[in-house]
Length: 130
Image (cartoon, rainbow, N blue to C red; front, side, top):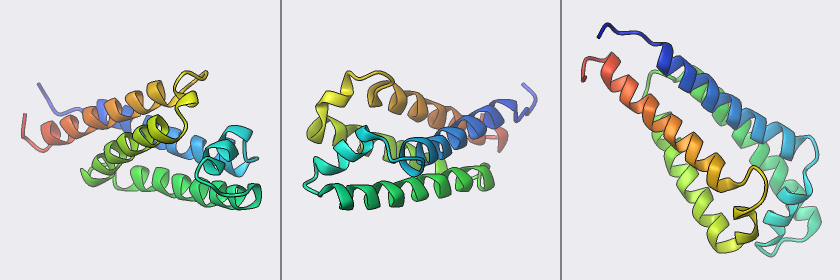
């Protein structure tokens, strides 16, 4: 099969879009009440929860940009997989009510993690590792 970076590009743009969207929309453009509830579940007051949402949103946007820039390297996708697992476990332990919410972390984290694994496979394949 000839090397074709289309699959990697689809993964790259999808993962970056999700990181950036999740940073901007529910965190920086708000923050959304669910984001605040998650932060307050850690014991922070509302003012602190807002600051944490802004910091988290900024980091997510920056990481989305990292995925766009370093898309041919493995580490952004490995870190994304680790982050998805960590965020999912956090939700299971700290805020399990969000596991059954609309557009919940179970489906989002699974989808982003799967896209990252596909990207890792494609990087290996494109570099000749089949």
